[in-house]
Length: 115
Length: 108
Image (cartoon, rainbow over all chains, first blue to last red; front, side):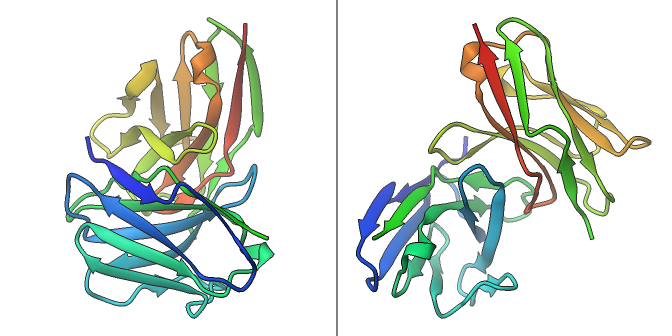
C-alpha cells in the first residue's frame, strides 16, 4: 500500500528557533499533500493544502508566514515552523494524495515541543 | 457546509463483545466517507471508505460500516473486538472534514 513517512518523529526546540518537518510519499507520486495539526484528545485540524510546484493554500486562521510549506517535488513536502513558541507545541500530521485519487495516506506524525 | 458528528467520545467495551461507533454527516455533497484509526502517537490509518459502490463497506481488521442515506449515518461496526482494537477512531467526509473522534477502549 501507499506509504508516507515523516521526519523527525519528534522534536524539542527552544522558543524562537525554526523547525522543519519533512513529509515524503515513498512509493507513489503525491500531487497533493495536506498538513494537519492535532491537539491532545482532539480531532485533526487542516492547516494547509499544497500542490506540487505551486503555493500552498492555507486555512483561515493559519499564519502563512509562520507555517511555511514547500512542495517542491511529487514526493516531498516540508513544513517549517518559524520562530516557534510554546503555543506551537502540537502533533503535526501530513497526508498525501495521488492524482485522481480520493484517498489520502497519512504520515506517522511529528510531535513538536517548544520550550 | 459539510460536517461530521461522532456521537460518542468514549466507548468502553469488553473483549470479544460487538461494538458500534456512530457517525452522522450533515450533508452529502461529497461522495466519499471514511473511517480511520489512530493508535497513540501515530498518524491515521485508513480502515475503510465509502465511494457509492455499495452501502455496506468492509474494511481491514474485521471492521465494516453501513452507509444509510435516510438516516445520514455511516456507523462503524465490529462483531467481536480485541484488546488491540483499543485506539481513537475518526469518521471523515471528503478529504479533510473529520469528526471529533471516538476513543474505543477494549477491556479484558
